Length: 204
Ligand SMILES: Cc1cc2nc3c(=O)[nH]c(=O)nc-3n(C[C@H](O)[C@H](O)[C@H](O)COP(=O)(O)O)c2cc1C
Image (tube, rainbow, N blue to C red):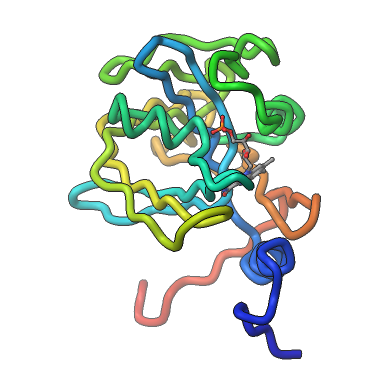
């Protein structure tokens, strides 16, 4: 089969895209509007960008009417966000926050998520998330126009909070303790409970 984007509807292309790129990590992004309304939503177009300066990125595609999602609007106006990592125990709560609430309604209140203040940025952190990454906006790269067009947010990592309980005795983050979930195609997710190690060629 050949997938030629120009011959497909937006819906078909999105469905192939999320089936082709798997598994995807999930950024559970908390933001705040200029008026002070908090927002929390998951994004699986998410990854690291660089280590110096330390940066990450995620992409929120526009709504069906071509307008940007609340997360993008908030980041544009406030310039800050927090990426909260999603362990299996928070899967259902994370999913509930993907419901499209109006801009003046906070997913955090609607779903009943416990939050705590961040140290360096205005948006709060998800208390139960074992890794919370405070970020400052560096750039939003617009990709395409209208419905489902991308807004790639690149953020500088200012400060990451890592719960002691996910560290091994050497102070490294232990994936078995974080228990992250990943996003697959359709409505599927994966666990990260089975892993294997494979040293890179030339490494000791
Ligand atoms: C696991 C998961 C991953 C998602 N990933 C993305 C994504 O990468 N980009 C995107 O635009 N929407 C994604 N969504 C949908 C958004 O979370 C959803 O549109 C949300 O309502 C946006 O919230 P906001 O309008 O408050 O910003 C995802 C939903 C789920 C459940």
